[in-house]
Structures are given as structure tokens and as C-alpha cells.
Image 1 (cartoon, one colour):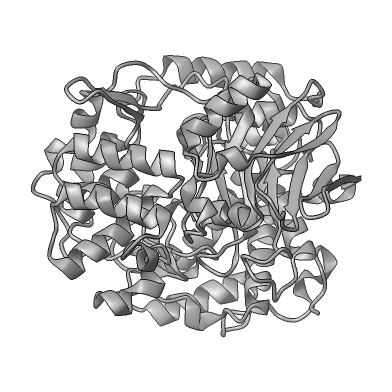
Image 2: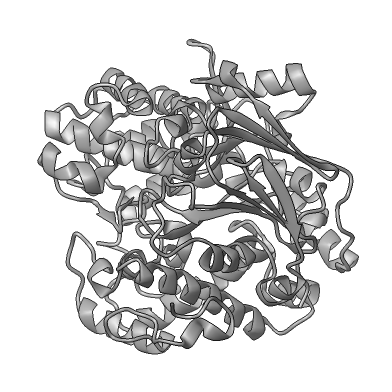
Length: 557
């Protein structure tokens, strides 16, 4: 099985020390990306760690595909103990940093400890430099980029950084790269903030040379370049009106299921503001959305569909420029747009202020700096909903994505059992239900679908390939088998081990079936849970049996 190559680099920011460890055996089992990072996190983060404590660790990792020139591979992974969900969590970002990271020659970079002053950590193939950066305290992401360019000659693609939200330990603070690309979900930006790390940069000239089939990669690149796909024009917003009209677009903090102003924030509205093409590293699909509003001078990238929901329909805001402004604020302040938008929507519900875009933008700023009500909202919906007097629209502390489980019942089951909670990318079961491959209604047979999709997505995030390439039209099973040099069932089995390690870690932190819940009822939900656990070989209380992971991860201790 093909896998990433290179040692683990451990960076202790408290001791200002760095060391390397040979992890070839682990890479041969877990490929790279989310797989190897989950293996290391499971084995090296104490089960009782405080997410904001020095004992928590953050992992940056690429997969084998990041040394290639194939479309759909401009992504990389981050893993750590989430302050939002209180469990092990992985998230990934697009852009251009994955190749810069691969050039360092490391397969994984681990950040541990806690610094007594604000730091930038510079990782190269020649070593690690620790730079005190007190002048960057409170800096927005674009200001960090400007500083790194002026002082170190580094480009946006070399940089991963946090904004004020991460410094202020907002539980959904994210890590930004290339200024507008986010390691978005789960609050790992706040973990870097707790370690007093403002930025980590990567550069070098030591990219591994892996044996990847050149003809297969060239064919994928040609297909991506010539495909007539609406997403190349409108990104993920292409289906906004279709979803609103035929399924559900969460509106006014999930109290309604369609939005009357959808045409003013959907795909056509976003495309009308797009002023050039945008892509991730070496990708010919070019589905990104550089947008500009000529009247106000606002320039941003996006919004994507999830942001159109969270800051548009869910906040009752029907002007695409207002949604663009929310998107830009989150990028600059370092905030996950889904969790932030949903949390703002909860606040608007409590104040009966849906549609007040000015209040939305003011509240986003307050969250990032923990000012006024922003201090409460910075904790997220699960921790703030009682004081706000609204329902808790989250799973395991993770705010919901746009794809509504009340209509897409398989996606609803996925949200419930996902180790990282209410995030759509953990399985993308939604895709099968939107396309009519499976009936959206009911849960019969859905447990098997969700399990298989979890395994596939865990491998996808380890290789790493973009979810848009992994839809089946581009990087399909045959492509993976050719490039990885093994049977696809072996890749799914690897993904299953990753899911199981995440679950085992979370079990050790006290999470079980009682956490696999939804804020709404689905037909035969408890039976579907039983079936899911049985397919996984887990106990019916949602826990991994003792000794199960001992063959490939830290034993049950």
C-alpha cells in the first residue's frame, strides 16, 4: 500500500525543542493525513487531557497524493483534541500549503507544550526556528501574511495561522492558510492559541519521490480541466436553490426549512460577484469563488454553500453582499463559518433579530474578541443555548451543516454517530440522498451506507483527495487501486480502523451512545443505531470492546 514518507517532527513550543521520530511502520498501516495523525494522536495525547492544556497536541499531516501533480490533491489534514466537541477530531484545508509542507520532508508535524510568549514556528527541511512575535498579538490573518512576507519572504501558501479568535480561545476558532482557506471545524485554532502559537510556516526542498502512475494522474488532470461541471462556476453554491426547493435549507435558526430570498444568496447571486477563477494547488477543476462587490469594494473568497446557509438563510439575511461580509470577517478573524453562523443565528433567535445584517457583523467581531455577549457565544451553541433560551442545534457540541437530517434521514443518522458530530463531510451520505441513489426518507439500510461512507471518507482524508474529486466521476475506486497499489477493500479497512480509533479515544473521555443523539426524531432511530454498532462490531452502548484497538493503537489503559 502506497503511503506518505518522512519522519514525524515533534515541536515542543514550551521547551523550544524539536526532534524527529521514524514512523515508517505506522505510515505503512495508516497511509498519511487523517489516518497517521489519528494513530499518533490516539497514542500520544492523554485520554484525560484538557483541550486547552499543554498536554494536548496538534498534528499537521499530508498524504501520498500531495507529492503528485494530480488535480483534487491540494489539501492537507489537521488533527487534535477539540475544545468544541471534547473529542478527537480531524479537519482539512485546501489551498496551496500541502505542497510547501511536503517540501519539508516530514510526513507529520506535531505541536505540543505551551509557550510563555506568542510564537511563530518556522519549519524547514533544515530544522525549526522559534520566533517571538509580540507585534502580532491580535493580528488578523491578512496582517500575519503581510508580516511573514516582509520579514521572511514567505508567501501565503507557506503559512498556517490563527486570528484573534484563536488567541481568545473561541471554541470554534480555526486555522487559516492562504488567507482564505480554513482548517475549519472543531476549534483547532483555539488549541494553537492555548499554546501561544500564532503561526506555523513550512518551506524546503526535500519533497519525497513516490511511485505514482503518471498516466492515471494525467488522465484525472485532463478530465478535471475539460469537465462541464456547474461547480466550476458556482462552487458548492450551485445547488442552493435546488436544495431549498426540493429538500431543505435551514432557515431562521432551523425553525423553517426554506428561505424566501434564496435567489438573492444562491449560486447565481454568488456567481454574479465572481471576478476571476480560483483553484487549489495544481487543480484544474478550479471550483473556488474569488468574489468582489464593486459598490462597496469588498473582496473575499466565497461564500460557499455552508456559509450561505449559516450566515444567510439561518440568520434570515437575504443579501449576498452581507453574507460575503460575514465570510470575510470569519476569514480575517479566524472563525469557522458554519459554527459561527449557526451560533449567531441562535443569538438572533433569542433577540428576535433575524435579518439584521449589521447586528450579525457586530456579533461576529464580539465573538472573536469575547466582548459582551460574544464571550458567551464564543463557547458555541451547546454551551450557550440554555442561557439564550433556544434549542441546542448541535451534535457532540458541533453545530450543524446545511444538509438537513430531518429530510435527508441517512445524513441525520450520520450526524448522530459521527465521531466529530454535526459535520457533513464525515460521510457525505447527503450526496446519495440528493441524487436519488437512496431514498432520503427513512433509515432502513442506512446504517450500512453510513458505515461504508465513514470508512471511505477516512481513507479519502488520509490519501488525501478532495471530496469533489472523490464523487466517483473523477478519482474513483479504480484510480485509488492503481495509485495506492492495493485492493479498494484494503483501503476501506484502513479507514475503518481510523474511525474505530477516534471512537475508542472518545470512549475513554466518557462518550458513548448517549452522545449519539439528535435534536429531532427520526423513524426507527434506535434500531438503526443498534445496526450501526453491530456492523462496526461495537457494544450496543456505543463503545469499542476492550482490546479491539490493541493490535494497531495504544491498548485499553
